[in-house]
Image 1: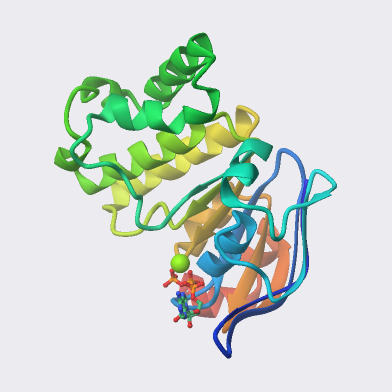
Image 2 (image 1 turned 60 degrees about the vertical axis):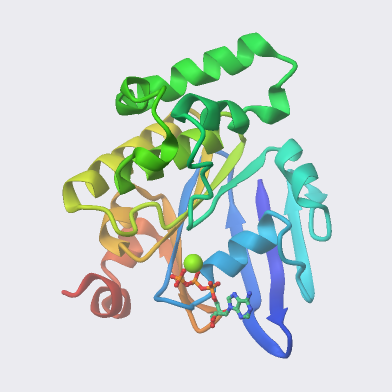
Length: 235
Ligand SMILES: Nc1ncnc2c1ncn2[C@@H]1O[C@H](COP(=O)(O)OP(=O)(O)OP(=O)(O)O)[C@@H](O)[C@H]1O
Ligand SMILES: [Mg+2]
């Protein structure tokens, strides 16, 4: 479904990622692991069209998408949920969600149905639907950001560190919902520093170090890989 071949992205002269090869199959849940600054978000931005690769190709469902503008990439079915959430704090929870359904704005029935689905995944968002997004807790704002991303019914959703800054109990709920979104038919590419929790729900993963992929494999392979365990799981 998604194929990155030999992708490099530069900020000026600095190569943030170099010669990245990633494959995501339809229906998979794939995780990108790596510490701060390893290049996960840069990879996401290359996929969603916010950064242009200096080298390499990115294909989605067989068509090249590198160099395509971000809104065309959303229309093709890829939605990114960014690390900093980018909510509209003065707008209500419901209004934020409806913004996420913007690409389908002419299909009111579908927007309404998507809204119901998001409320089913995150009942707390239904309880707070008329509250300003800015009044929600960190965990609730993260749920809203994910809910808004799936309002457009993407084929592939890019989730950038959804567990960052959340309390352990909320992190667990978050991963449960991500797994459910995947089981309901959305392909998921997840960037995480929380390696153990991410690998427990993932099919496969790639481990980044300073802009390159150093290890890749199935979730079970990575969970039992010594390097991965030492660096990211602490056991
Ligand atoms: N806009 C930018 N201009 C210059 N350098 C940048 C920019 N964005 C990121 N970088 C650098 O590129 C490298 C990769 O950063 P990136 O944000 O992709 O890492 P990351 O794996 O997402 O890290 P984190 O876990 O902290 O989010 C880092 O060295 C970072 O400092
Ligand atoms: Mg990042």
